[in-house]
Length: 363
Image (cartoon, rainbow, N blue to C red; front, side):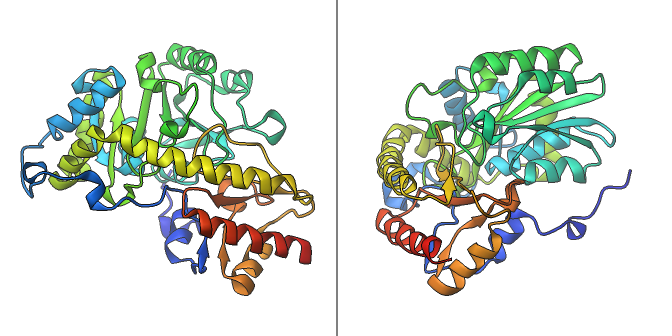
């Protein structure tokens, strides 16, 4: 099988996100309002241009490992969660390998294995099941050809949280055929109550990926990582050698500073997201044309239209007429839905929802 070039794919989410027209009120973002450099309160020794990070910056790897209760050698640094996912796919997959991936889901988690020539099989997370997983469906789909099962927790884009019992069941079935389970946890720290531990803490066959990008307002830092069993971490580190050799020293040093302040940064995000989520929940109560599954975590809402099969024409009119940006649900396999960012400025969210409500009533 010859992998398709990315230029041959239909317009995918990240390409759209980079080239899209942005409205004056941009509710199409998925991260928390950006921090300033002053929020990290740097000391002189906290930052350098060069330093020892051939296998990753050891203080950063230690800080991540300590937070997870893992060994330092289980951590591989990466360029954001997307970079971390790419390293995992590149290290584990070859053409023809079978990969099970949730649907709806985040497009790049499908696109990269597809590009590498893997065979993609999808399993459903449905509105009717509150976007939970049917473990029976996954277990029935796993075969001796299965190399990897891919999940997000909380689910991207709905915010549904997987119970640890479901993860253990999936992991047991994967292990029996020699497969791994990749769990993208970039939104995990956006669960404020009963937050589960990282999947990597469950041991083999679990691999977790995450970063400081979404929940902490540090998207530009691009500080990400993989947490994996030791042997797999070594293979993933070898893939890192091929892709970019070493990570950026300033990013990894600033990552250490950020992790030292993570509780403060998380509290900042919690206050912002709690206020915005309450506003969005109250707004949704009055929307007869919309329905949704309330998220348990994350930074976005993902409603669907009761009366439209495709939200995109409505979203395009909303942008052109009122200058309000949303993300069409087609990028997450559910065109009747749209994604609304809840991590930005509260006043902008209120103005955007006022305009969105008017548009809903007017067409």
